[in-house]
Length: 122
Image (cartoon, rainbow, N blue to C red):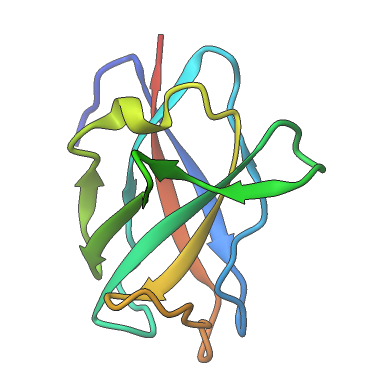
């Protein structure tokens, strides 16, 4: 499969027994536009929520839009583009939280899970 020259993929691993990833730092010329989800995860239908920070080592805050927690619902082994990627424009340092479809954090009890951030380079 070939991709446009302005696309990049960055791995982000949710560790075994964790639901929150380490920080993924984007360059100033990159925008997060979606995720490729792993073939296996602890819940068949799940969702990602996001925590953003001003620095890679500072405090991270849940990301809201118009008072609603920003979440991306997905199934395993999918290429997921955000419906409105502008929701995360300007976010340089981000963590992903794996949750059930009902919004409860779900630890990856059987193995670490690798997600791929789909990044637009401009």
